[in-house]
Length: 357
Image 1: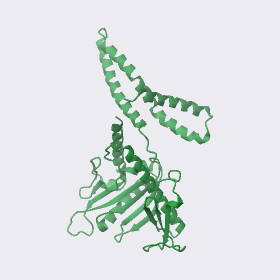
Image 2: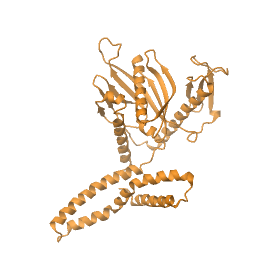
Image 3: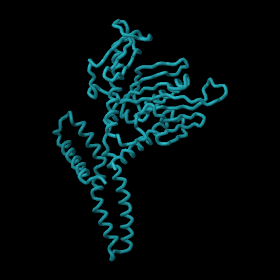
């Protein structure tokens, strides 16, 4: 049960915001923020009021049912109404609990997605390419913008590694459950015996961090430059355009050589490094908060096998929630992607709610 005081504070906050916004005296810089907060509260304020009146309404109906002189037809009507009230109460309570769950500040951020071919040789690189194409199609349908940061192709025309920035609305909240090992089972074009091969690719989704989210001290960085395409090495030759940035305190390192400009490579490298450091800090905080909580999803563990794409059976299975969709082609086209994401999000919410109880 949600404390009465918590519900009363929600209603009071909604009332105060309503007065402030209608007064026209609110600071212009705060107007958009306050308007968003008011809109969010507006969606649940009626439920909050119903939740508060539940006990009073319940007692009134129970009184009618319990009185000896009450007409039998009226008792039946009151009994039906009481059952409906209890059912509504459970739904309203769940809605309010979801609203009161701590918000992930990164959910509304853009994301950096990193896909790397894993076990399976050339076939793994082809699968990594298929995954990237899938995310591109999902992005296109949602009118997101995909900006390539770096790409490394394999001899088979697949991808050894690709890193991209995806910009739009609520990117990270949609893609954050994609982090982990994606496994594919299919017959490669080069297979003459018709045998099914298994290979894998690793996906990492990071919230794109701004400078306000994470400050990186220049003194904590070691920047090496080298000729693009070569093995690299420390150099101060200004004609060398490839850049390797190492964050000395953590040992995290990023190499970037896709651009001809050293300046552009450095900027791209810093964007990736900032995202990785931001995620590292988020993971540390999250681990401290949830030492006693076991979550099936949302761990972000890149070594965890999260999904299998089985081509002979035309299915995609998410192992965290035991959901199988017999829509593999539609899924890879981005058509059935939301169905999987909605199920994962619902499971995450259920886990969060159980941790509240």
